[in-house]
Image (cartoon, rainbow, N blue to C red; front, side):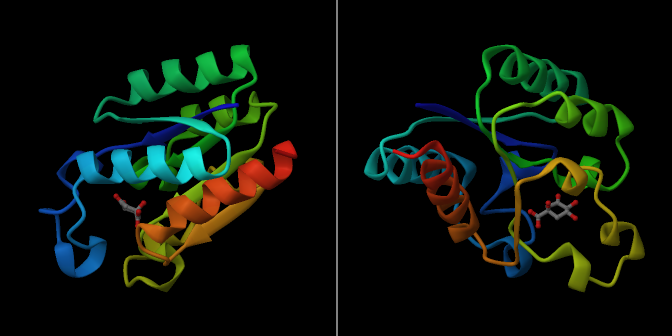
Length: 145
Ligand code: DQA
């Protein structure tokens, strides 16, 4: 089964971006890890990253059309994008919300709300990069394969 891992703004700089918060794994390495983790549980995983909100909306709309499960780290858009709220509402296959850090425990109050959570079958936060593996395992279990 095909699964999309979709990463939002600034996550293209993973590994170099505030490594004390987000770790040292690069986005390229994350994509390769997700491919391997998916393979172990019978999922064909494609990982994408964008800094352009419309592009993420297009990918979410395609996932809605195709009934594709999604692992979504919408990064800062998580906290305020009603367009992403609406796009997530259209998904029919499982949606797992992932954050590398735990936004609910961070100092900036803007991180304490999520437009994704109301539509998510599961939220995984504060687990670092391993959160993506956990999300893929959840989707594999939900898909029954
Ligand atoms: C993040 C947390 C968000 O608050 C932040 O804007 C990000 C990354 C995370 O993975 O921990 O860009 O989604």
